[in-house]
Amino acid sequence: MNILLITPGYLPGQGGVQIATKLIADELNRREHNISIITGYFNDSPKFEEDNRIKIFRLPFPPINLDPWRSYIFIHWNIEEIKRIVEENEIQVINVIHYDRSYPFTYVLKKHCGQPIVTTVHVTWHADPIYRKWKINLKEPFRRILRLYPGLLFDKKSILASDYIITISKNFEKVCKELRKDDNVITIPNAIDLKQFNPSVNPISLDCSGYKLLCSGRISPEKGQEYLIKAMRIVLSSMDAHLFLLGSSNQNEIQKINKLVEKYKLERYVHFMSPMPYENVPSYYKAMDLIVQPSTSESFGIAILENMALGNVVVASNVGGIPELIDNGKNGLLTPPANPELLAQTIIKALTDDNLRKFISKNAIEKSKEYDVVHHTDKLERVYFEIVNQPFT
Image (cartoon, rainbow, N blue to C red; front, top):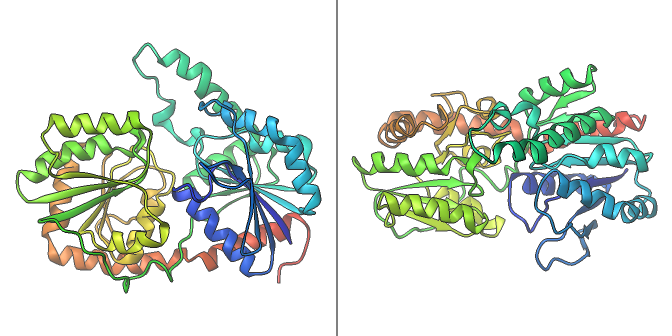
């Protein structure tokens, strides 16, 4: 089958959606499907390249960094080129990836392309009460008018325009079914490569004393790093520990967290790590004593799943799709979001209770086996064949 994936973010950019899309593209390619990918420019990446038969087309983004308008303009700017790629590659099905807060892809594409469109929903504001909540500041009316209301509208229109919806969590599935009023919605969680993430991975050596904690993901308000910094003050009052923050961000967000680190005099204990090649990530994760993901909003949490597959103990917020991964006290530990005191207590418990750590590690490894990319792609293929009216074999 000739399949087109459209996603604003793809490798070499780093993030859970980029990684999930790459894994699926590789597995579909291994199964002899013809895969094309349309994405945006990333630094000095070429406009076109082939990666083991996968065709990657990178198109220009507009000089505006405000979603959903950035993606809305992206589609309109590039629609003729997209139509050309679809025609020349004889695309049979288009899979749009709702990545980050970028929504207009599907409903705009549907006006120009006759191929059936599957939309994979990684993020939806309709399922994010925290983001929709009124904030008490002077910027709030502008945020709602320029971002939130258009985002909700584009999101709904794209969900309704899709021939089929794939969600990465049951929470998102419920929201999409309520919007669509039909059953053309299925949950297929993000997948991982269990050959890459497994308990036999050897850790790298880190030259620091005490416990090693990792928070992986872009530095951003919804990732909750500020609450983890505040929790570290409490943790360090009872033990020696170092926190590693791994992930990219804009300089403003990094400066905000740095100011918090300086305020609490934690410069010796908090380390900012630049994004690294993905093949090095498992060994780096494995070197940690604890993984902490204190998000206030999280659709899935691919880094959580990767660490569970390694046998690492994960402490994470009880938000979004995370409780679908973590059964509290069994294969990980959950805490309320935005609560540094309870987060610190959970971290200390996770580091000092050896029997609990062994119990969680064993169960985490077993849980991760449900998310192998091979099983994920089986389900995805069935959807593709169903909407083009071909038998799945």
